[in-house]
Length: 101
Image 1 (tube, rainbow, N blue to C red):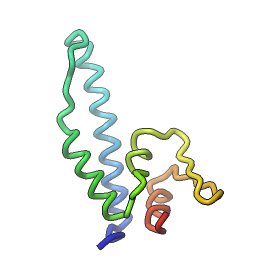
Image 2: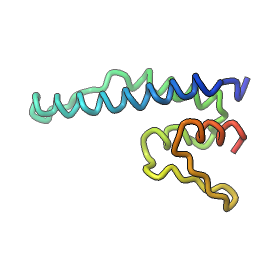
Image 3: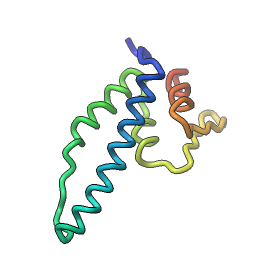
């Protein structure tokens, strides 16, 4: 069952998560202005986190590359046994995860 996710589903899921994150950030910035900095809660965190966990499961992402790729990195560079990988596209990330790194 592990590694039983095709690239199309992987790409569509990560693209949707990134879009949702961007849209919610814009919404929160607008709401901050409207509500004078009072906390605005993000409603999709639960479902987004569940989607990430599912994709991680089906790609055997045991080192949390997917959340790192979605939210943390700006250069998308990974070193594995002194080999440098540039994971700047969903295809490259998918191939890296599926190969078992």
